[in-house]
Image (cartoon, rainbow, N blue to C red; front, top):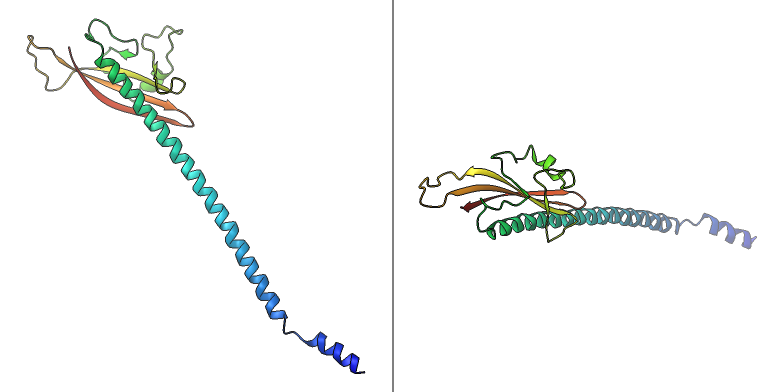
Length: 171
């Protein structure tokens, strides 16, 4: 009989029940925090990758545009030797017509063909468009006239970045 009372006393003893419930609640909270942390970390990694791709494309497009400017500077007389990647019709190359120009090819017989940039020949291209005589330029025939040129650089690697910059040349 004493043994039955001891067993019944153990069955009715609920002192450890609260500890087990508290441990399960803490375990659930820690699991929830861990899951949320992994989701946030995944989002942060995705954001960092997107920023890296954006900056890479931006700087490659800028490098392509600067390469075009450098090449224009090295041409002694633009009047005598215009590059194939420069549109000579005043105002023909702008933001609206630009997408069609990027698709031009020499094999297609197009008069203006985008030039691959040395920075990344696979993904970076540049074009230039003549804008006419620069505003405020002198009309004195004894001095060279200053001409305005718009240069576009583009990079397409996991997205597209396009840079537009102004350039002036005296000839």
